[in-house]
Structure formats: C-alpha cells, structure tokens
Length: 99
Image (tube, rainbow, N blue to C red; front, side, top):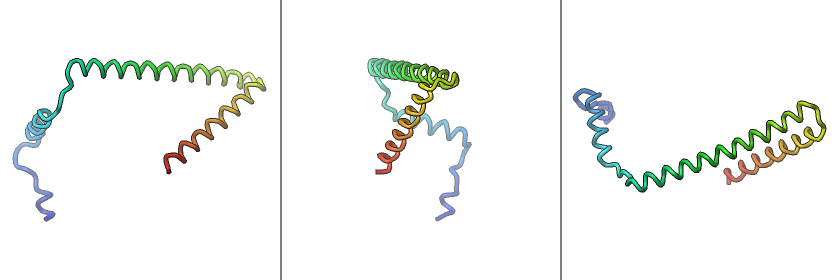
C-alpha cells in the first residue's frame, strides 16, 4: 500500500503541474463585473477605515509617549491606566477564545 502512495505519475512534472492548474482554473466560478466592482469597493472602504483607526491610534500613543518622556505626571498616570486597560482587554479576549 505504501508503494502506491510513493509512486509518481509518469511524465514531466512541470507539464503535469500546468495541466492540472488549467483543469482547476476551469472549475473556478469567476465573479461578474458588477460583483467584482462591489467587492473592490468593500475592500477599499475597509482598508481606508483601518488606515484611519491605525493613524488615530498612532497619534494618540505618540502624544501619550511624548508626555511620558517629558516626565509629566498626568501623562504617566494616563499611560498606566491605558496599559492596565489594554492588559485587561487582552486577558478577557483570551478567555473568550478558550471558552
């Protein structure tokens, strides 16, 4: 039985690869032009939204870090609160994944 699994099909492996690829591509259900355009817009909007969120987080944490580096006590307390909140959120998300 093990001998059958180890045997390869005869012929050139590269030619066989391209033939099998062509067969698989014929099985693909390609989206219509309208569906492709709609999905492209969704991807663009999600990308734009994530860029805005990540940019806002970068500005916030940069502002917070500049305050901490300048040894402002208010920023140090705010940094500790943010760190604690992120730690708690991470632990809670980890507990949800385990359930």
